[in-house]
Image (cartoon, rainbow, N blue to C red):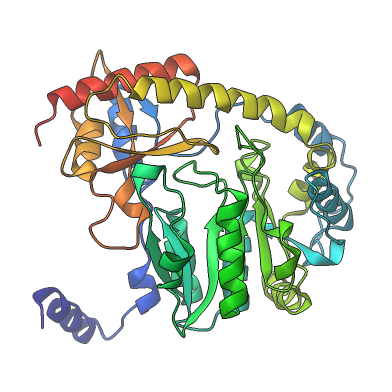
Length: 410
């Protein structure tokens, strides 16, 4: 027995209590883990450029605040567990704008996309069932799986082809008797990859062949710069096993509102989800109402945001070309990229960069990519960049990164 395990047993004997295995397995966020160090550097007069987190810096649409100011409510009451009627209709209208046809009864409003994913995992999986994911993946999938007592079975992707999906045969090798679903994010966080219709079709075929659910996280739907993103709802042949997961956060720049949605044509899935919703009572009423104008007329709000991030994507790709030894590609969507650095340990480099390095009293905060993998010792020389700054600040950030890499000793 290893020493760490023995220490854990001794500690449990000494205290008489122990937290759950679920709690012990819960991963800390690689996106936020260096944030406290960044705040300490700021207090010392160092400017920090945040490339670590997907919090858009743009203005939240005025329509949100106008809707809040215009509310005339005698009481802030509980909403129905599936969502307020006018908010459900607005979500239906939003989806129809993207040629996704759903009834209100097939939509449940959730506390952000995070709750939608947790509800979906709990609805289709039992304890220790498996869900296929493609790594690197959104790091919080690890946490959601821990909460749901689900095992993630990762299929490793490669930076060499921009993290696109492997062949159907390669994916199928990861299907076991415990597999219940496939979970994808399209367009993808953290890679910015947009899976083609043919790629998604491979997953549809597997779900039909092995009787699996296909869970599709589509929160970056509008952020597809060269072609329309393919939705899970584009495949009527898996109508009974497709689950759409969504959120207002990024497309409208309302991350703090925490309004998401889960949708499916599968009545049994939606009934189970409704019961989960009843257990947490309801989603915040005011935020649901505030986002109704945006959902009813989405394009006028999303188009300027998407155009700005398209410019930022291009600036990042151009800047990365100027940094020797960096491995990159052109992300087709979202506002992230995973890049390879000419270092052995990107986690150590990222910590050194925020703790010690400065150029003209400025430095950069990155997100080490190893936390976006489930396979041990993966992504060790990679980091995720989020295009959250204006173009001049992005250009300056990449200049700092170049100088840091010139200075850093492996």
